View 1 (cartoon, one colour):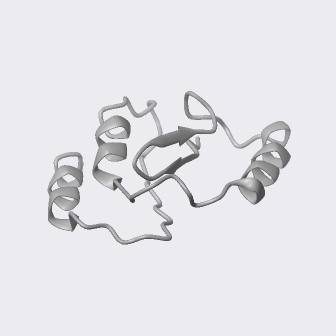
View 2 (cartoon, one colour; view 1 turned 135 degrees about the horizontal axis):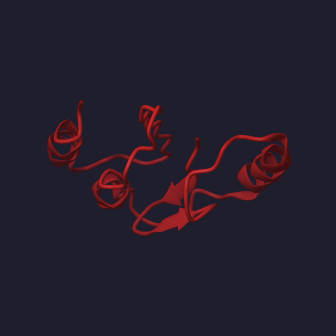
Length: 88
């Protein structure tokens, strides 16, 4: 399952929930990612993680979060502390 979003001072979700990467979504996702621009303001990763991490992980799945950013994360210690609360 995948949950695609762009983030800065706000978050922009491509889909409201995680989706299975099926062929019917793949081309849509590729085209949408090609059009996305990294202009959502300051890179506020902590706020995005506060929204994502409390979500329930579907049974039989593990959560992997991959972050791509064109900016600097100013509050690395706070982000690390938040993420460590959700380590299994």
